[in-house]
Image (cartoon, rainbow, N blue to C red; front, side, top):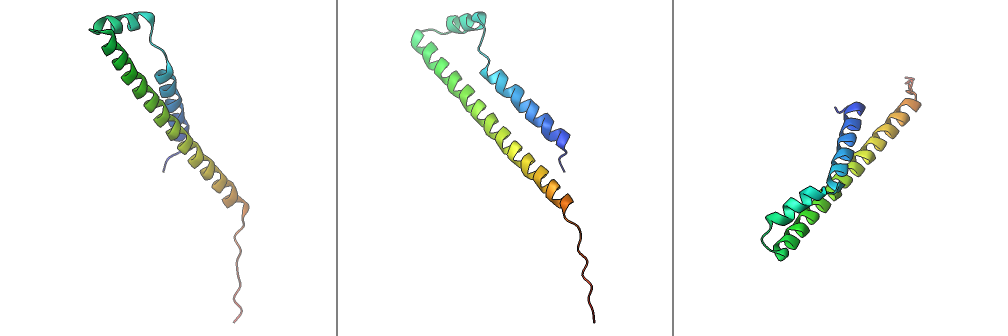
Length: 94
């Protein structure tokens, strides 16, 4: 069974992944990438591929984070409900 600490750690890792994916490259990284391309058309095409891959990764991580948050909410709500009910003992009179 997954503990709350593991879930919170996973959510933190997802947040870090989203931040890394959204971080823009430095000027030197952009310049090296631009100079490594043979033509401007290939540079634009490669840039579009990289941006699409980054957007897809961010979308996947955000969806995963939302699913974990929903599961965590259901888990916590269920725990609250379970603790509120008392066991009812029925007596069978024969």
